[in-house]
Length: 107
Length: 155
Image 1 (cartoon, chains in turn cyan, green):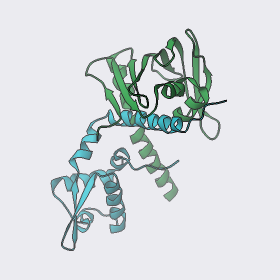
Image 2 (spheres, each protein chain N blue to C red):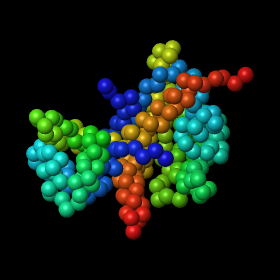
Image 3 (spheres, rainbow over the protein chains, first blue to last red):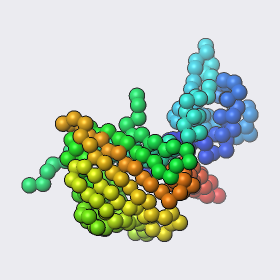
Image 4 (cartoon, rainbow over the protein chains, first blue to last red):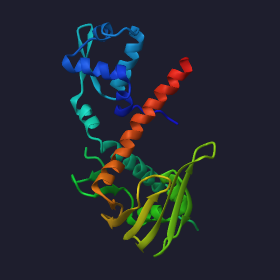
């Protein structure tokens, strides 16, 4: 099974939740974020990457530094517990649509 | 862009409405609901029985790669009018959730597009909210399980 990155996967991890609460206060560089954890910089950077892939974090470039910000739009999605239910149906219906577009009537 | 699939669930009510527009002629949309082999493909479940007649029954079953049954559901078809509507019940077996009533309406939008409106009525508002939260809970559980698997491999 393909592992999809979604916001629910992202927030299921305690370290990632901690990163989100840090960045919620102010935009931070990956270095500053990592200083708050005992894990290695690579581990934290992997977590940041996952959060970015789920669009929970946005990045901006300031000179040579990259800053991470919280994406409030995506956070709202977590707040909305109906969204996974909608997504589940949306995916089923997308599949239905794709199958029927290629439908060849039986002779 | 507006999402193609919409859920309308008012607070404190025991029903919800799912709406979706399809880039398909009405006849093809309806066919996807009545032909067992097509239902199997998009629902991702085996169709054991699908009797598209009044008083007919339906039965779905999903097994994991090892052959264990992971999902079983069944119901009765109360009314079926081709390219127009299906009224049926839906019950998940081996779960505490009671049967729910589903009203499916198929409408033509244009020659090439159609729409589906699915109203689901639950036994109580609390049960509706529980069902709504199921994929949310599963999403988090799945992520937890993957994390658990990962941690177990490290041991």
